Length: 198
Image (cartoon, rainbow, N blue to C red; front, top):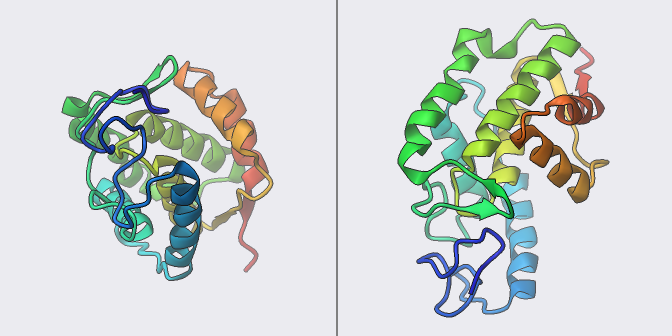
């Protein structure tokens, strides 16, 4: 049985099922989705950003923080290859090395600080796209990466708000980015980003 990532039966799912094995032992997709919303919302409310640790390890920490109540593998790099339709994410053998390359751009560019808004948006969108192609976790990649980008933006003097962006817009924009067209992602980040008033 194939799940939404197209990996078929894998060790993350219950036998003969596309449902992720979870710490609550929920056996229906509807219950698991509802639990994800409830528990990640609670964990988000307790989240304290660390502006001094903007690294891949910190992205893993964010994933653990959000999903620790749901999955035993929260915060851990996936061990299976995954794809969504024709979008194939980074092969598991190359995630760590590719992540190192993605994240080294941050210190090299002073973590995008002191950049005018258009330059910041372009840099952040490009970084987001590169890390999104990694998709380092079995589930919860988008939520973790968006929260990481919020922390990155705050320390650079900007605020991100995703509330007015639909899930369909996210999906289509990410597909375009994967195919090398970053313009939709630039437009989306322009909508989501504003300077922090001091």
